[in-house]
Length: 185
Length: 185
Image: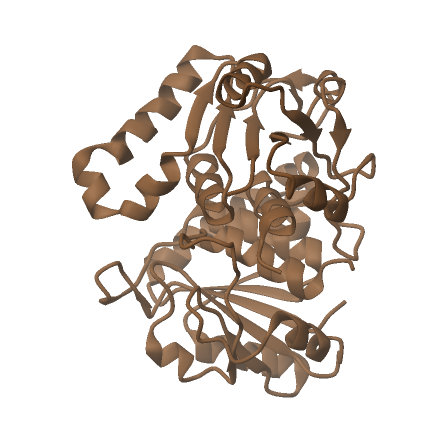
């Protein structure tokens, strides 16, 4: 298993007017991204939201699907949900990883815009050194706010179609990023 | 633009007990897959369901986001939704493409299990011949029923993690498939 962690951030992110906002957790963010994380061998999937009511909502979905009956009905969901950890902010995420790994992870931001400092190929190579934990940040809304990029050690190159249009959902973008970094070759 | 079409099939597909069922359309199937289709240059995204009430539901979501106010509020969604066509069954989809292209598309099934007859690399090469339309079938639920595979000219190799677990959502799988076939190299 690779030494890779991912964090889905609901704050601070931009809305379409470029204002910093907190977005809401959706059930599909939990389900789809947890399944991608399990398929590609991510160690932990952090769902990050500073609003207590939002974290409570995520926990309720989580508990519903992890009770005994649901576990028997759908083990693939349980297997994926086992990777989920609901956290308050990025600092708590980093502390959680430091606690597991006894070292600080390399933090890698993502963006749909070409501000990338590391290519998929290079990060894939770095990840193969299993000694070094890597945390990939994923923004909701209209993308991660500048202050999050300031906390990243590197930014991954954007995913490219060949067209002007480039507006993948965070769920689709995450699937492609994990496939590029951890998928079978 | 590539000459590629995709169809998300809600019937006939398997449930977890291997019974043939009709699944429900979800809002996220429309949003996420339409955005992936637009990003990677798919010509049309068919949402296929034999139940009139289900097609009505999809049409209501569609109309809601395509009215003038929503168009102004969020043009990226409108741009993606422009590609959506809601159809009754696979035959109607093929007829729609034949009507646009004056030829029958090559029909390519997909599966999470290794029953693939064509690799991503080979299909990517085939697609670059823009004269030949290709229709990619995507199953919901626990995957496309046998009778759908019988209608396919080929089946694409499965997406691989490196692990036993391989249960991507259809939205995530579609994103990866389109990136593999149509993404920038």
